[in-house]
Length: 229
Image (cartoon, rainbow, N blue to C red; front, top):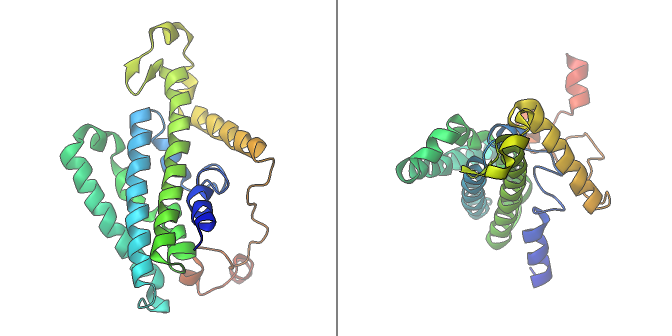
């Protein structure tokens, strides 16, 4: 790949194809871990490490993984790296481990990671897959951190656990709750849309093409499955 293409792969996940604010993936950890900056940053970095490692490993094995076993193999690889990351966080950052709780385990089934494995790492070189993992991981981390900053500063008058004295009388407790998280999430999505002038990727087709889970449903479109039911 040329330097220009490498840069494009690396930067796509930050704004143009941001997994949280453009592709609207990983909404569960996005809403659950963004009440504090430390929690959001920890979740983002943990996901980045798993994305990077799983992308590299899956790219290395892409030619020997049987097509029919593709998704199960990807999940096993991702789960292995999640387990390693979880153990490291528990050993060296026990406070963060308690904060993230079950959401660390749920990185295994995070659609961002499985989606990149299926759509990119399983089809591209190790170098490109590593850059994609870093870019998507950074995009995920930045989106969570931005959202958590707004929610913690204006909702709890603090930043990463440090009090902001002059904000104490001006907090909006609503932002610390789930509806407040959805509001901030929506506003950030609108901001990114405005910054990109609506040029961010939009889903034009709901067929199996481009779906990260197509292999697990035997390539039946959603319309076909709906007709069967």
